[in-house]
Length: 306
Length: 277
Image (cartoon, rainbow over all chains, first blue to last red; front, side, top):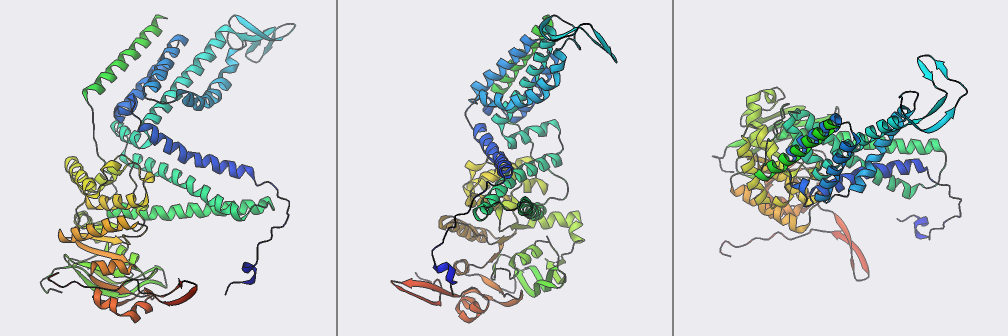
């Protein structure tokens, strides 16, 4: 019954191994990070810290309040005070602020530094030049722009760039802090108070779960594939196999959700979502909220004083 | 069966095809009575899950008819709000793969979902959820997202999510699949308790141990997707030829010291206790 080749020892031929398509592997590893981020958020949100004990509803409102304050304060000193509030909350919530800053830096770079850096030049903003870049013999006029004989970075322009970068850093790091201390599932609970339609919230939940589970399945599928296929033949063949696996997993996901829809119907769903509205506020929560509101108001007042 | 028992489901030559021309079920006729345990026994692909979905009104027969308490189950009648409310409140379905029926953010949300959809107040939904969590021993999982549960925990949460609706009829699709012995024992005890509480249970399985434990009426499906026999469990279990024909027992190879041989393996011997013991 057993074919003859299975009864003989496996002879491994000395074949030149070419490296696998690293971009596929890296993409899938990054996708798997989605699951590890979700698991990490769940772990952090169950730590015994200040923000973890705060009801999700309150954290949502706190987040909106903080983002509002970040947008209205303009001085660098005020932004630094807000940054210190974020650092303080992360320490009290036992969340590593360095990790949060590292994640936020990408957004600061993309949406802060790269976009606003030209504003530091004296072409766009007048001011005291602190660093000269280019020197021309005489000034030029091009379209609506007057190009002076010296182009360089101004103090005022640099301050403007720093303000924008700090605003982005404050906004993104506070969002990440709140999400780390809350977890996605509890954030959904908090969003209910903002009258976000229940249909949208449940769709978000299903989409989040789908991405997390899909990332796991994709990686496992690739691991299984790579156990049997490690020689790089033609990239077209490789893409076909990989595309086929991804297509299969999406198809499988679609079938899963057909069954999920049936399960929802079996439990009474008739097109209108009805979710639980619960608030577990205690006096200490109001105290914490009150303190933070006073601090935010103080920051705005200090900013207005200049 | 007791002639005074009320009919819950009545199937008359019901059949279903997922793809035209390919039978998933064929010519199924039998009745399910109130407060009984009915086991739908069949090998993989015999149509057990399809039959349960037909009973739950998730799909509708392509041939024949299915009646629920005298009312014919059709797509049209299930769009009627009043009937839909009554039916969905009364008939619960626990899927084979628990993950498909866990779609809320947290375990607690899963348990309150059903009662809220059928119109119960927040307070009552919460009260039921707390009691069911205690019954199932899952109170410590209250705030856990479903993708962070083990297989046994998911099964318990899936069952709990249906029980909070307090259905009178509960359909179980392979309730023991993927569970360790302790979890199986828990589920079996739960099934008996639910039956004693007056629930009608319909259980689809291919595990003969479960049939032997439940000692219920058995509807046996064959690989041709037809109902072969409906009889008490003891009668079905003693008909070895029938079990072989329907691919529920088979020959197994096993080893005695240095010898490997095959013979028909009947995993256990049905036993009975005297009334006085």
